[in-house]
Every structure is written in structure tokens, then in C-alpha cells.
Length: 65
Figure 1 (cartoon, rainbow, N blue to C red):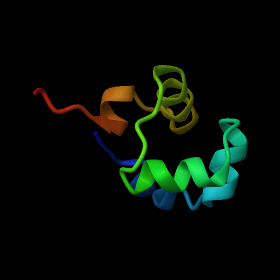
Figure 2 (cartoon, helix red, strand yellow):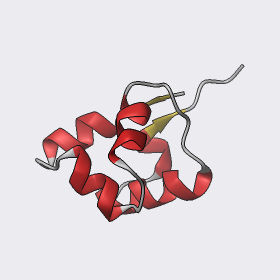
Figure 3 (cartoon, rainbow, N blue to C red):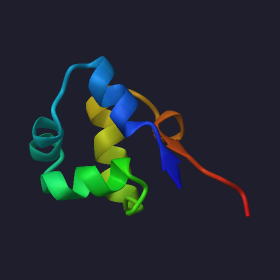
Figure 4 (cartoon, rainbow, N blue to C red):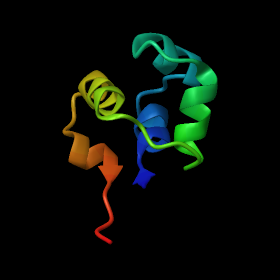
């Protein structure tokens, strides 16, 4: 699943560490999300979307199979 986390993070001038602390995960989790190596749980996706003030669908790009 693709996402726009890095794009939103850079627009808001937030470091990976700051975002990780805000949503209570490790920096490595944010790195993995941004690199497409990890898919966020629904709970984490909600936390990140809420942090940026956007809908989950704006942040995570779901591809129908």
C-alpha cells in the first residue's frame, strides 16, 4: 500500500522522530512506512491521519486487487 506520509511530513517540516513520538511508534516504523516496507494498522493509520488533520484515504492510497 502506498502512502503520502513523507510528503505530509515534509510539508509540515516535521522530522521522522517527531512524528514517531507523536503517534507513539519508533522512528524505524516511520521509516518503514515511508519506504513501503510496512503497512500501518488501522489504529496507526488513524493516529497519523489525525495528527496531520486529514482523512485516512488522503494519506494512504488503497489499491483494489
